[in-house]
Image 1: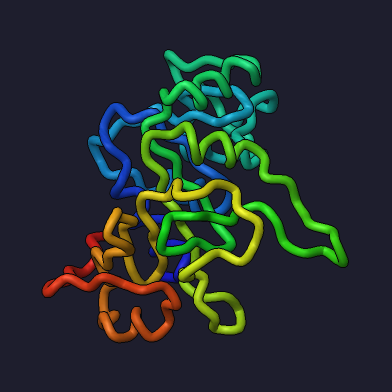
Image 2: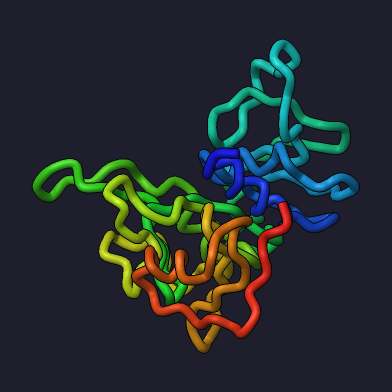
Length: 220
């Protein structure tokens, strides 16, 4: 499987029965395709829909309903739509159990930059959308991203260089190489991907890693 699928499959293992889950663009939305059997979650999109279908077959979508990634979907029985004020009141009020978000970079303190890239002198794009609210409002923040950029440079840093979306907000980091947990003691290497050695992860990680005596492989 490719890197995006591996990350999405591992992220889906964090979905717990009965959770209200929010999924960001890209890999996070892809994780909805791999929700474990028997796990039922309420998917929430910040644009104001609750309990919508994770994967809607082509031709079965509701033309008037789209998730936060602008993908057509449909509301399941018991679901609803709300206005933006109510949607964000729910997020800010701590009623979202977990959010899965992408990132440009994240660091060992749990700081995250996931909204801005330089577009020229003094110019940045795009805007952060609802990420700032989710990062401080959700009970658990799961960050999904590829471990390195196109130049092979680590995106798991000692300190973020890009403008932050939120400070010390991330709980868990999932890449195609590893799962890392942000703790008060530092960034702990919890799992490695199948066939990946601990030394391989350390070689492409700028952040300081706390490595337990035994590091299990991901269950996908």
